[in-house]
Image (cartoon, rainbow, N blue to C red; front, side, top):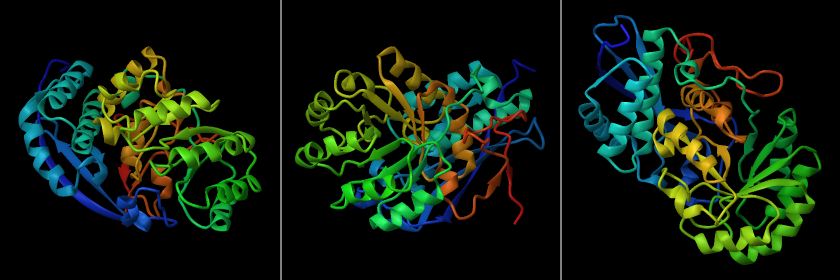
Length: 355
């Protein structure tokens, strides 16, 4: 059975999901995600394994050039490229490299197929995804993210999420400092800040000593994606690690960031799924980066795929499904310390919630 091949059939579904709270970030192109997000769920099946379906997810972000329509086109090309997949770890790694070689970028489309392949092969072999890939179930806890809003509103949401060991606060506007002081008044744990390219050198220089005084743990993507000189300038002045997100999409971006920032944010929907994330996280550590595993506003499918590789990260920001008003999938749970519990069930260990 281990040397059998899998001939794949794919269907996909575009989901429009409401958010628990408005969620704004500094990048204006993301403003449509204020109250609703769009994500794409795929199902992979094989005629020789009746009843087994692999589920995957890719979150299309226009910032990275993807929409549900582009994903639908790329899906067909990727399936033709990978053809048949052996249902084992080697087969998954081969499919991963074939997809990467077939097209540059299009991380969400590759991610959806990659996660679904892992879920399907896990079900065929009877193994959870992390076991299939030889990864640990010992994960760091996740933080919880709060979007840009009035300082008092952000503080109220922070108080509601105060059981999380860390909070991530979206910044990039005129009320950044007031927002952080408001959060600090209700939360005494580490605060991670994410400016989503929204700062200038002047605003960063002004805020930096205040961030240190406030007990901020790290600063994520303060400047535009290719502003390497600005990022290096700030990291030289900062005792806090600067973490590249929009600057760090694909594995080849890592080399350009050596000596520029202290940390990198890897996301499955950016880099192309579980396989690429494993390679990228391992390479980042070899290059001396601190590793941050992030997410989009995804369902439990995307978060479960990310959680499978979370043992490779220093910091974890896997809260996307917690931001949704209604997650259409179930089976992924947090423990008392806010660590995702990896399943003992085959594949991702998820099921579609009854409607």
